[in-house]
Structures are given as C-alpha cells and as structure tokens.
Image 1 (cartoon, rainbow, N blue to C red):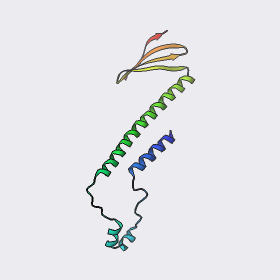
Image 2: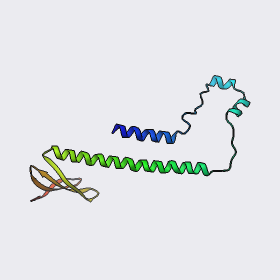
Image 3: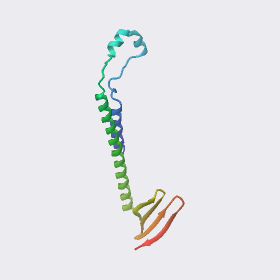
Image 4: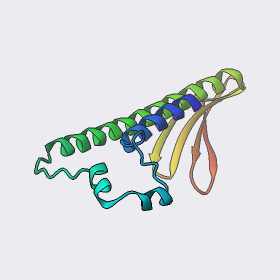
Length: 133
C-alpha cells in the first residue's frame, strides 16, 4: 500500500513541478549585488505567440492526472476485494454477497457456521429477514 502511494505521489510531484531541478539559489544579499543588466541576461524574455506547446503539455498533464485517479480507484477496489476474500477464508462468519437496494440500505447474504442468513441493513437497524437453505 505504501509502495503504491509513494509511486503515485512521485508521479504527481514530477508532473506538477516541472522546474524542480532548475530553481534559483540566489540569496537576498547576492541579489543586491546582481545588476539590472545581469538579471535581464539571467531571465531572458521570450516573446512568442505560439500557445500550442503549452496547451498540449497542459492537456497531457490533465490526461495523466485523470488516468492516475482511475488507477488509484482501481487499486483500492482490488485491495478491498482481496481483504474481503481473505477475511471470509479465516473467519466463521462469512459475507457471501452484498447488494445495495438504495443509497442507505443494503442486503447481505451471510454464512454463520454453515447456515446462510439474509440480513438487511439501514441507517436505523440491522434485521434478519430469512434463513436460506
């Protein structure tokens, strides 16, 4: 889990910090020693009317972020399924199936010591509906 988070964070950091390696290391004292002409040479002004490269870079970063979000949700969903499967193998109470009826109510088929039971869950209560064969 930590490994996936570290990979996702580093990719996000690389996309959002393009000038990370090229930062200015000028202290305020050194800045006063640098003349105005030297500053102009240090920071050249490029006057261009081409916005295509910037637009495509922005579009590529947007597509990358959307893909990263979907990848994160897919990994979390897969991890939850693995945890549920492992919990069902080692415990006496097993959740066989879960189905949402509405946003606030669910139906569960639970196996307890070989008996299958249909249970409903809502905000107010959990109720046994029926024992299944």
